Image (cartoon, rainbow over all chains, first blue to last red; front, side, top):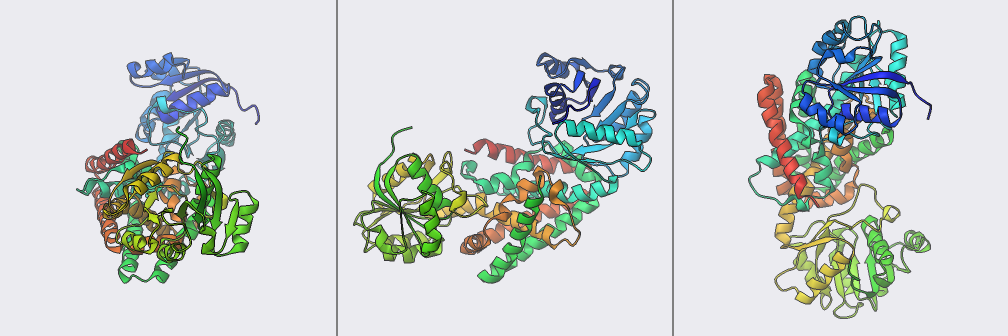
Length: 289
Length: 289
């Protein structure tokens, strides 16, 4: 493990699960002299300060004065507004990145809003269905994949610096375009989340009472992410509704195929269907970090 | 933790993931003086003996001579045949149970086949997508739910003894009828497995190449059980095709509902849909062991 970059003053905007984990990881690894938690509600920031998660809290953009790194960890719809507010306050050339799970055309707008700050969009693939900084973990980004999505005009020194920042938190960093990012994440994250929500919704709609104390790995794993924050996921899903609709149509088609095989009742073609799925899942599993 | 029952000679029929774990747990907890691995292929049993998983191996029903407990851990379709072969060999009154994930009308046939042996059907909710005794774990049944499904005529002393056996391995034991067991398991296990297979099949059918090194928790959790053994699951699915077909139809209906909400593009009703699913999943999660 290399020493990693040293920051003087890191501002974490939005102290939720990911923001809290960034703060915790920075402190635990001694990568920042001072970590500032920036939010809208002092009453909600205060306990994080008291808990030692951050060294300072602020409810104003002015908290970013003197910063050399800003990490946007709130809802991605607020990034543009936040960047416009931070741009006149933070030092020119201050590094800025985010943890947003959608990119695409938004990245160009974020760059514009960031003005003279050195903005580089990124997406560490981490999180969990439990929200809030109280569930934050210093090892949240260890071994996690992190996609950095620069534009062609993004400053190379900034891209490298943000890459080193995530690497210092333990992430495996790669570069891709904002468009390729969204195509990829639509399949490996948005569709499975939507499928889990649909399965949980199917159970919720079933009037018969079931004691889920009996649930095994099948139910627990397959629906786990359906416990995620609905407001966050509604926003993510609506960012790319077309791709997700296609994914769900594919799921319905395969489910109908499976039903037809059950109806036919012959083991051999059913096994062949399951084998294809199983082989694919195992091969994908071998690629996982 | 109580001392648990002591067995003189336990015969584990079928040394796979679950059979291996039963053997390992018995030895680790010193609950059996001798554990016998019974299977069809000496060449495949031999390494388990060499590894110390069992004290003895046998490819003949005669291996059950002198047993005071037999645990059937192979495919459930073989139970009837196996019980018929074991009944004349094992001592009268020898306890017999199984780990099969389907019950229903089969239980009565197993009782009949077991003749003078004291058979009690059970289903410990444990396992994993990795098969074979090499993946066995001594703590496989710790904290796992275990359903025991006696018939009205099943001897009470045998039910209690089998209950104590699973409790000694760490499981949480409850009683239910074979029919209620199948209704319950159809929802908390078979449907989620089928949904995971359908989702993995949808990805497998998608021609576009995706690097699953980027997959996060969403994909990993939601499809994890799709890596399970396809022959086992084809058999399980075909045991109750009607209930599973209805479950898959429900999944397709909710997926189509989610698509319609994406099409409409309004955050509020989409959030309401996701919230219902999310609330249900969280509440179910609180019931989990």
